[in-house]
Length: 125
Image (cartoon, rainbow, N blue to C red; front, side, top):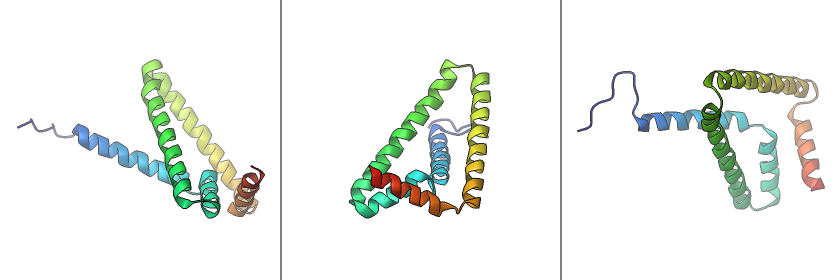
């Protein structure tokens, strides 16, 4: 029988599932209400839902793979210290930008304006 893992350590299967749940949750939280969410919803109203779903899931898979590849490559190519500080800076930059955009949306009519802008963009293409 294989040796039991030490207390406080995880097996590779447990690490995989923990990473999958954490990344899946973050993707779900960050994508709900985003412009691509509205685009997919509007496209599903105009085109085959199965085709739109397949395209959206495919795009999400590609973006997830690219993010994972970058997350693997960045520490391998750049010092872990610099990678850490760069990740912190990017986190704050995009977090503050999201808060700023939310504040503008709150004052300017919220999601209805974004929905109308998205419909206009889809109609132009």
